[in-house]
Image (cartoon, rainbow, N blue to C red; front, side):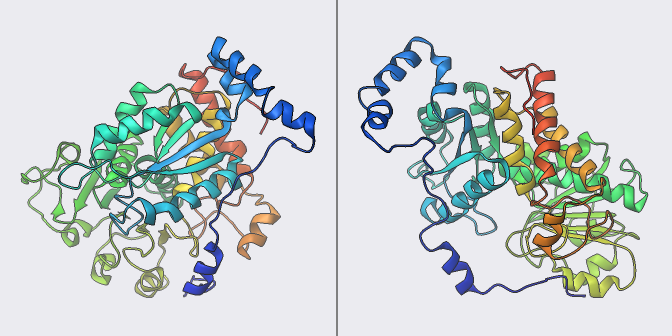
Length: 420
């Protein structure tokens, strides 16, 4: 069965992007001389002086409290790789659109050039220096599309240095949503999360954090693969981040790893999963083929292989069922963090976001606007294991849980949660 409900041409895409996707939204009126005197000179000097005397007023007297910087160096964009800062701008604009549309957060692209070492790789110190220097304007920083392993060190250092939340979306966003989907897969398949066999293909930022989060949730049998095969203790070519998840095995290939696997999670490259691999999996498997824009195996192929057998298929794309994509995470996680002025986004806040999404998918009573947006009905099951981005309830469920956890962990400067 073809689950792709519509087609999009390249012309459709390019026409949509003409002129860009974002612009400046003025929050206060500017209609006469009095307005000009207040907004600019001489009135604005009073605001500057007030902030100089009491720095905390920057949150109430400027837009800082609701602006997020979407920062990248363009070294790991989607599945396209190192395409550079300029070519990354459409993705950064897209993130800003999602921030605003789903969580009413004003976000702005900050693609940066000149932060590379002599080998053409990301220079961690140069990137961090830029981030620190621009941070005064923003209430948070969403790191985006930065190649591994530099992205890990950049996020960790900025998280320690800055007093605003820093979140590398490619590490944590996909991991948060994947964990929510995995929990619901276990409920539907009646499998114990501690007993399932999970294979992750792709050991970059997303793959490593997915491994971390699902292990936190109880997964014991987890095999991680990269472009050279299974990450095992027999290999000498793996970095310190991959070494954490190395396993003792004589098996070497993804194909060998997939035998009797309950769950495949792909954050790698298109078409790397074959029909034979799917056929070798356990009964009632889950195939999360999340590579964008082209999945590790197309849903149409999996449908033909599985026939009438039960299975769950998910991709990272918006035009198939079960979209496991970080669009369900970062807007609402930042919403909750900004609303209580959290200084960071902790692991507990990330798990709270994941739990909220998993629970909401099982809630029922899908709003009519969601059904209209997708032209279909929704019921918790194989074709609906995760909420859709257009579900207005996500903001209340996820942002609230994130804010509550921030207060609980003592990283919030405001201990009152707004009504969502």
